[in-house]
Length: 294
Image 1 (tube, rainbow, N blue to C red):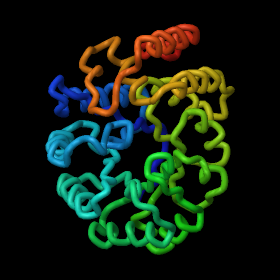
Image 2 (image 1 turned 180 degrees about the horizontal axis):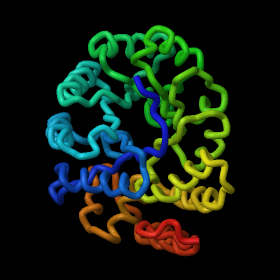
Image 3 (image 1 turned 180 degrees about the vertical axis):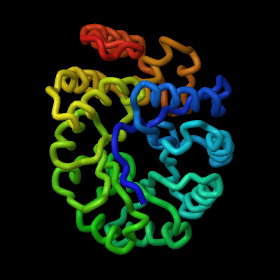
Image 4 (image 1 turned 90 degrees about the horizontal axis):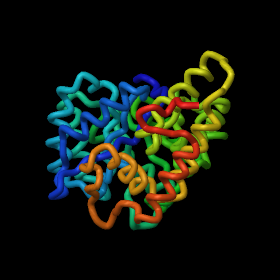
């Protein structure tokens, strides 16, 4: 088991005009932002339209991804409402030598800590060689992990439950577990999280902030002056005005029109929203191909 450290993007899924998954474009997008500074990619998370993409397409994608030069840098999102489909997708991924998984509890039904523990217990028992990052995002699944729940899961499965992505932000300041990765879901929490002992971040906007985020992370490790954190946080705050998926695809479509394709009910920003996004980013002198500009 290895601790997850560094800057991870919650990768975008790139679609064809018929809304099928464009496997080659999705992989090339991910590899580009790794080259820009990300330590890795969490693919098929909420930013990647994971709940809207078919399991068949995900399996086809994993088969192709297994040949990538950056294969070891991927965390695979396999959290589905169906326990059986979650386990089956993990088994396929394991057969292709992927081991790290990001898994959110099921949405729709209400439940408490005991039920969540049972859900992950079933997964670990079915795929005991897996390494799981819990996904804490109450806004999307209706459940918020407690510190006690996570400690109990780690106590039971120390080799399988290796970290948590904290997008509810109730954990990253106070949760302390040895050799356990805590990764907030926003650049706004990157520096503060590192100061509290977190391992890095997994965020949507790292699809466009990879260089800035990596500079803040590296400067922290080197005890350098933080010259880029304010700009990084300002950029994230611009995107937080909108649906993140809509904003990211709208911005990326300025470079390639294929990013305009989104699975309903997701949509691009309206013309008015797009104008504001572009103006706000221009005011920050932010460009995706030169995000280190002062």
